[in-house]
Length: 96
Image (tube, rainbow, N blue to C red; front, top):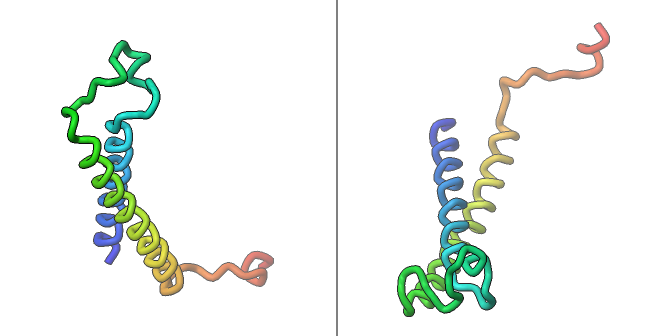
C-alpha cells in the first residue's frame, strides 16, 4: 500500500510540472516574459493554431490536478486514521 501511495504522489508531482510547463507555453495577452528575452509577442512556439489546443489541454490538466489533489488528500487522511503502529504519547508516558 505504501508503494502505491508514493507512486501516486510521484505521478502527482509529474502532473504539477506538466501543468506549469503547459501554462508557460501559452501565448500571453501582453508582451509577457517572451518579449524580455527578445522574442516577438506575435510569435508562437508551435504555430498559430496551437492556442486553442493548449487552452483545452490546460483545462483538462487543471481538472485532473484538482481531482487528484482531492483524492490524495482523502487518501492521506484515511491512512492517518488507520495507522495503528504509531506510538501513543500521552502525558502519563511523558511524565514517567
